[in-house]
Length: 135
Length: 147
Image (cartoon, rainbow over all chains, first blue to last red; front, side, top):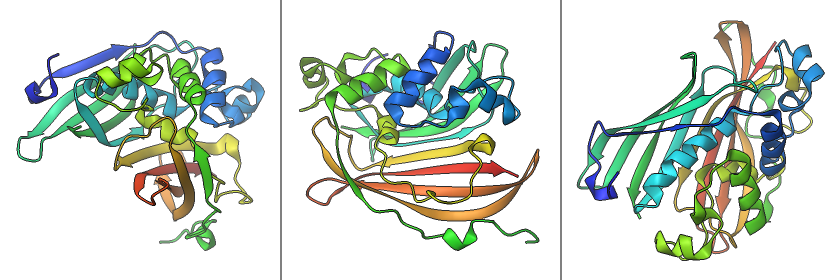
């Protein structure tokens, strides 16, 4: 991908992450301060009706932060980032994040992206969008 | 509307603000947990090469700056809480060394019919300002509480 100025509608970027691990959820709980036990305490998660602990939705949104970092390095600033969490993610799941340029405003120098995260079986876990501007 | 939120009396409830310093090691631990190896979040020369005067934090680091929770004391079963939506609007990036005044408020408490029945929706809005009083970001977190 070239510079921020060269972004055009239809361009996309993707990122496939390593399988989610429970250790990663514990690290993310510590770093983010989200200590809901549903993310690391198996009996607690099962009592909530889940087959195992579940990943923080914000961890997947963090993967999009990683993906958008490729734009940030090239002179973009993130103005807005939003998401809907569609399905829960479990340890072992492989998450792929896709971002596509859906609008470019040459006057305002803003770029709109649509975002989608899927598991390897195709289940959509996160849908959202981001607005970038020139730094 | 036949059902009312169990939490409707708490709309507008605001927790006390907290001043939080954005610490370099905290940002590093955060990107390590995500597995984001971009050097701009840990290395000053890399941050400068990308056009930043200081080390920036990634956008979702805003979630790691936690002021007191206005939902504290509410009767919420956290086994039944699902994070449904999240939004961040930034006036500027967060930087290592920022001292931010962060404060959270319950802005929505209503009821939604979902696939698995009626759920209570709570939206918490968190705002952060820098030492000059300039806004840095607003975060909106929507959770659904299954009944």
